[in-house]
Length: 286
Ligand SMILES: NC(=O)c1ccc[n+]([C@@H]2O[C@H](COP(=O)([O-])OP(=O)(O)OC[C@H]3O[C@@H](n4cnc5c(N)ncnc54)[C@H](OP(=O)(O)O)[C@@H]3O)[C@@H](O)[C@H]2O)c1
Image 1: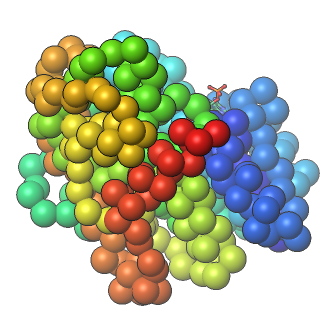
Image 2 (image 1 turned 30 degrees about the vertical axis):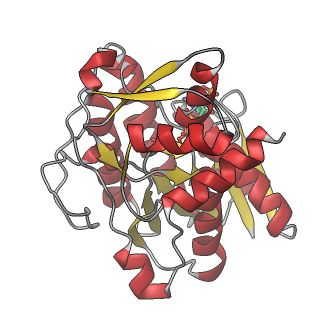
């Protein structure tokens, strides 16, 4: 099994590479960072696919700065839409399966019950719009595609909400977290495990799948849990998200339903709180 991983030094890319190395040592892995494979370079993408002819390519490369994307629209489009187009068309030529990552930010948050895979997309920000287009491009060009939508990812690599809360809390009496956006936190190593599950157990289950922790949370709920688990004497104050003056709008509600993967494979989805507690204990004890 030959697996190409793009964006291999990103949060998900690193967790996935680590997971596959440890749990699937027989797989032939080709983790590539932006320097090794810039997905906006069509020729280079074609060349890599032609040379490697991977069974699977997992696209962990993306422009992920949600606020900055409002300003750097061209850059965001080039990576998220054009880059994905290059991967999908190269995969179609070599008969490879593309596992592509999308996001809960394709939804507008008007629902008040968990979003299912077939709910209509209506992104509120430019990043979300490009991710939705990246899904469409993949569907147009390629039958062998597995699109996974995670949300609010955290892990031990790269800056993310959990590591930021722990940094903010250093030497402070109070920190602020928003309580007007409700979503589904996703632990990156659990996402990596789900991607591996699809590749090794259901390699032909082409389609779109939601994956995140079970339950729902606001950033405030997460911050309270992080501070409590880390044993810090810091008060968390709930504020509206406008307090942080974000450039991009975000959906007020983007909880993802995991009913599809539970129904199809009885996939064991852990509650976000249990996963987060365990994660914080691990990194605090490092
Ligand atoms: N993080 C979240 O909360 C979240 C939530 C929902 C969905 N997602 C999706 O999950 C996927 C993985 O995100 P992540 O959190 O791992 O993001 P990340 O940590 O920002 O990683 C993205 C990676 O893509 C690389 N990259 C950027 N432009 C590239 C290009 N032109 N060619 C090749 N690589 C390029 C980056 O390289 P550099 O290191 O050089 O910048 C980085 O390593 C993305 O599709 C994202 O949209 C993320």
